[in-house]
Each structure stands twice: as structure tokens, then as C-alpha cells.
Length: 171
Image 1 (cartoon, rainbow, N blue to C red):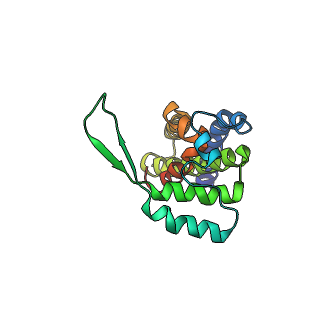
Image 2 (tube, rainbow, N blue to C red):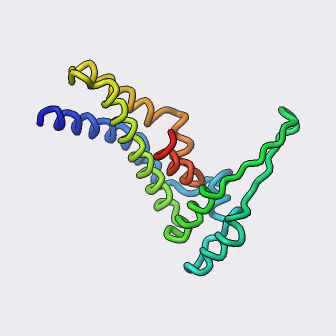
């Protein structure tokens, strides 16, 4: 029982550290350089009803391809197919409309789920004897992962909610 209580306490510490970093950012407005794609419906419009959502998915979502290349750095042409992330974003936009606080809160909630997963994976790998050193190492590594600058961009930009969702399954 003490082992589980300590593990839950350690997880709460990790989530509190992560929350202290990200909660002040939840109430910020849209960023024009990236989230404007979501606000303006550049890839998919915000559906007004379920029929329109299914129509958009069947007409655009199943044929969604973006060709990207950078002639300055490479002559390679990369075809990026990301239908799931865009369709997921469109479904979220159906429920959240144009409210940035809801998007940021949802993306942050997904990040907290990922933080829990990282914590439990590290706990299973490292915490064999439940020593203070092992527990501190797990808290430190999880907190570094959840607040690392590489993680900040996917969490703060609502356009990346599809990527944050897929991190739950593939990270």
C-alpha cells in the first residue's frame, strides 16, 4: 500500500510541475503565424452539423495530400499524408468552434495523459526497490520530458492537437 501511495504522490508532483509551466498559457489568444490555419479553416472548414462533417471527411479527408519540397536545401520532394491529424482537428473544431481556451485546454489534457504514460513507463523500468534515489530520478526525468522545449511547441500550438493525440500511442 505504501508503494502505491508513494507512486501516486510522485505522479502528482510530476503533473504539478507540468501544470505550473503550462496553465498560464491556456488563456492566450490565437497565434497568427500557425494557429491561423485552424482559425481560418485553411485545410478543413469548421463543420456546422454532423452531415457536413461526414461530407467533408468523404470528399476532402480521404484525398488529403500535401506535397512539400524545399528547393534551397534539397531536391527531394516529400509527399506528406496526414489525414488523421487533420480529420481529428476538424472533429475537435466541430465541438470547440473558434474558442482558443478550449483548444489549449484539450491539448494540455492530452499532454498530461502523455506525461502519465512516460511516468509509468519510467517507473516500471527504474523503480525496482522504491528507494528515494530511484523515485527522484523518475520524477526528474518525467518532469524534464514534460517541460522540455521540444515539447512546448506541440502543446502550445493548437494546430498540433492531432500530433499530441498520436503521442499517446506512438512516442
